[in-house]
Length: 333
Ligand code: NAI
Picture 1 (tube, rainbow, N blue to C red):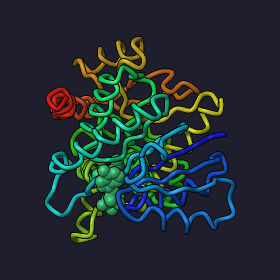
Picture 2: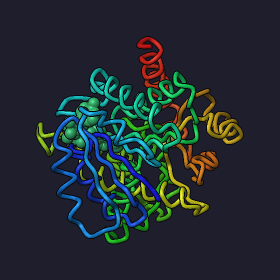
Picture 3: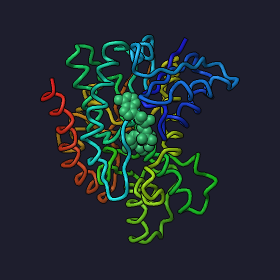
Picture 4: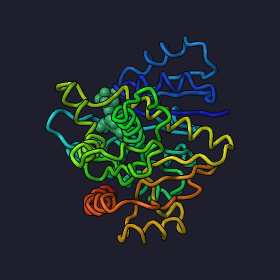
């Protein structure tokens, strides 16, 4: 029996994500939590003829505890999204507190669950979850994941467009490593399953990299004050959760980028740290998943000089973001 939970389930991401999880036959029980509207969302979804039994809870009557008890996988899209002109870091003040409180709930009621963090800024909220779990003596770095899948999904789509084969997007695989904000998002286009045209101009190449790094801004601008990516994020979140569920059920060899603690695989981390030339506590690299969580953190492998420069540019911001998250919890407890 597999129980999945969505915290922030009534939101722009939460609702379509819950719909996609309800459609996943690997889930037997789907519990939804938010500070508003979950009874309605849960009742609506409960009429869909798929196996998952859906329940919805609000904070009163120990709602968070009821939601989380027995959870195997917890996805967190709770928190405020960006408006035009905002960076993901601008969200920290509000979202840090929300994520800290929800992480406390998970550490208390479902300490063994896999935690999938969508709430931004991911580079800081994942360290927050880790620190809260440490405080509760239930920290297992193999089980906490920052969801960077939307960057991967965007890279597939944009590369497929650029090579003139938009229909091939589902088959295009581009590792996107680093973190999940601006310059910390590093697409390794030289490792794309579908090579770029050899005569691509430097400008077109730079524009592609920038589009992958700042694709979220395109959506924020187009929504014009009504939020950030929700539908594409729900798709990406469901993709990642689907892979986690397959790994949980024993499938081997699933490899996907995710922002994880390097403590999850010390040997892999040592190789990666050497490549990075910097000590980072968290990083998104290709990660092999297993029934216990992270099995192996893959090295970057062969990258170009240009990609090495992007990685170098990402490190200082990542370091700051990670410290911001960690310090927040250390100062609050
Ligand atoms: P939204 O405002 O539409 O939904 C957020 C939901 O969280 C609301 O329903 C709200 O009631 C709920 N919420 C607030 N405080 C809560 C609490 N303490 N407990 C439970 N639920 C709570 O926002 P949206 O668009 O769904 O975005 C959610 C988050 O996801 C934002 O932080 C956004 O920046 C992030 N995001 C992450 C992406 C990624 O690639 N990792 C991509 C896009 C957005």
